[in-house]
Length: 295
Ligand SMILES: Nc1ncnc2c1ncn2[C@@H]1O[C@H](COP(=O)(O)OP(=O)(O)OP(=O)(O)O)[C@@H](O)[C@H]1O
Ligand SMILES: [Mg+2]
Image (cartoon, rainbow, N blue to C red; front, side):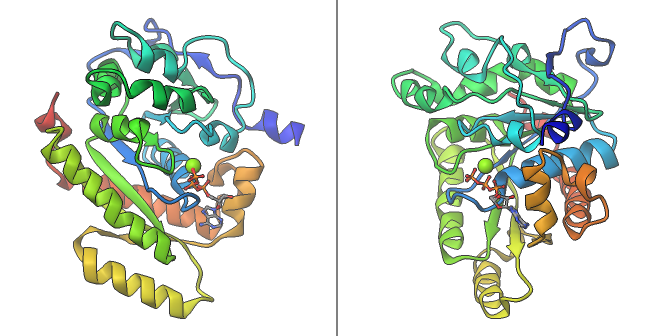
């Protein structure tokens, strides 16, 4: 396992503003929150492998923000090293605005940067409850990052608390993974209700990039038809063409601390996430520019 760990990411290091590839103003990132109220539906698997697909097959500069206290992005990519320095909690709880770039680290995977795991986010979620304007803190901290990356993907915790709200208000689009279970299906309605709150009450033009069917098991035809049918009936225009099959290589890759493209590049899981990256890029190109919702 040690070898696998070291074969994953190098120690993350802060991106210095002086780095040549970090010139400001070259692009305006599209920010995608990966959110679902139900746990275990594939949010982190999707965040990590979509980010790697965009970086490796689409040549993009991609930033993953792990706003889930569980810190599963880093463990999925085996960033197991404790790194002193700025955490997401430091940014979110600061009394004067701070720049998220202080917490951003490069990874060994070309084009991919990420924020470090932050267990303190659990407490941060509670502490944010007393802050005025708490929902807008991440949005404000993202201004520089938006100029340095093509896509920013935020991995959300499995609830609709202050951290998820910060992610949704910072994002242009939300991607909603839904596995083939009734609980996940019910969670989609809750999440879409929260999107309406973000649009109407928080006055933020968050769009739904799509509902992603995950962990689709060809052996459970009946349940697939029931949940797939219900999704189709209620949210047809939102369902992505790409569906992610159950693929043990995806779970094995996560356990080995590697992306599916490093672990099993020809697996069905890798093919599905590559297809998802292509579909996401086309959807984003067809969507109104993030700049038009510039904040
Ligand atoms: N398509 C898939 N095929 C097989 N296993 C999968 C698939 N997608 C995810 N898994 C496995 O299911 C488990 C949960 O996935 P993941 O961590 O991505 O879910 P999550 O929604 O991020 O969970 P949480 O809500 O706890 O953050 C992991 O062990 C992961 O490896
Ligand atoms: Mg997760």
